[in-house]
Length: 72
Image 1 (cartoon, helix red, strand yellow):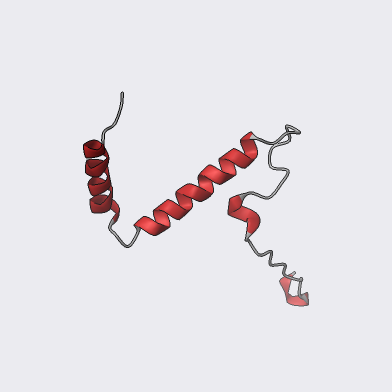
Image 2 (cartoon, rainbow, N blue to C red):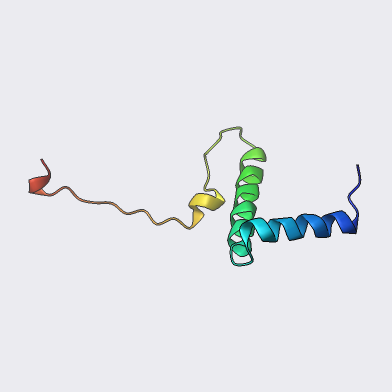
């Protein structure tokens, strides 16, 4: 099954109607991050899944909270 340019235009118009023009960059960014994370995990040479940072966690900031005396 081969998609021509007319079908791609129709799909793009439907996507713009469903998500809206303002949400398209966010949808494309999260889709790209998901594909990158999938490729990173799929091409892991040592076979250990989750060993390295993925696109979803590469920019994440770790926040550690120290226990206070009133937390007990």
